[in-house]
Length: 161
Image (cartoon, rainbow, N blue to C red; front, side, top):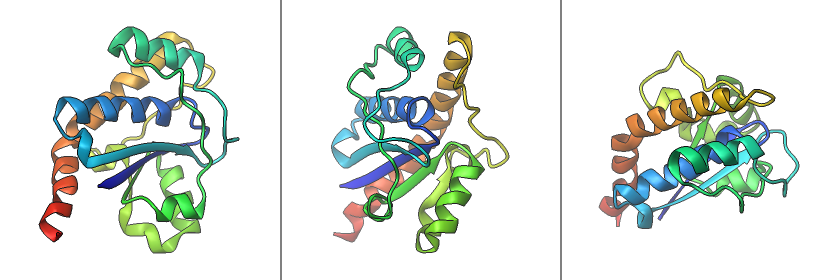
């Protein structure tokens, strides 16, 4: 089983929403048993809940529950234990690669992985519900566009066994 890590800054908004949305997409694609999906932040305090607006938006739009989410700070051990790292921005990608040069080949921005290399996922922190919904829909679009690549990535393990 492979592990996919979604990364943003605080792990309360973008990456927590992306984690829940990717789990949902994998379940609908009958791939949930092939992947562990996690999220973390480059600059966060572990153990904090998801942003209340992010929780409301995911519950209202996708019936997904973020109430059990707890923030996680990225660490070298966490990064080394995952197979694919998808960040919300180039800044996150560059931060991880600069501090972990051995991981360069498995770090992408989510938009880049989805085929949109010149785009980034905006940070809705401090914004209203409409902005959170817009960002969540953007993340969902990128995850949907990435699904064929993720499927291939998850099945590549079976070929190696």
